[in-house]
Length: 313
Image (cartoon, rainbow, N blue to C red; front, side, top):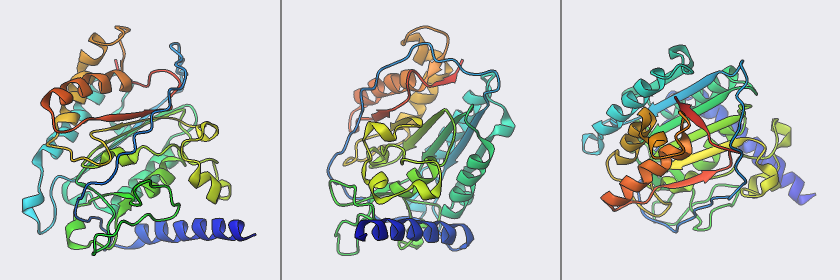
């Protein structure tokens, strides 16, 4: 009984937090970045080379780049704004992507409130035949208290005791509200798409490799489904997560995003299987090889998609 009550409490608390995020105009994210332990989870699931996309398949994308930070110009990263524009350009150059199906949010509009609203837009638009892509670039950090003590918001699923967070436009002004990895995973797990690709280009982005929560409705989310992050039975949603670095390291510039975009223009497939499609996996392999040459960071991937996730052609 105790576990069931605990599970219901967590679900209720999550819903209250999400509601507050949507209605609060003051919502923002951010804390200072410090390194923690690494947690790279890559399930070596079998590959299916002949994934068939239905004729009714639609491609949806949410491209979210902060790049500038209110009252903190020393934290601005203009390369993030350039990278999101470049990613948009390469998507719409491919026939399966329609401009109306792509939302771009950047700069001063890249608040935590707007991120939640855009995730809800995506959930409302896509369905089980579709493919969804979410790209987020900003500063990242482990979640730490003022005294530096790590914080792991339930579910307690962090080996290092700290959730990872993403800093929004006004995040450095308000370190008490934030987007964290479990909350992002919660919204992604509400997507019905046959394939979901998440790309995170930020420091400590390797911590955003959580597998989908088990269940398709609010009632299905239990304490156990939060905790079984890497159990194969919860991978009902085909998801691939591309991250610019490991969980305990920094990410420099926008090298990872830039190489991903280059790959999606055709270099990924050229150095991949040559089937005419630039997949998320091929783009990651291409970007990782070049980022590793630059040094300082090592991109990571979680691949739960049964085959290769097609992005451009």
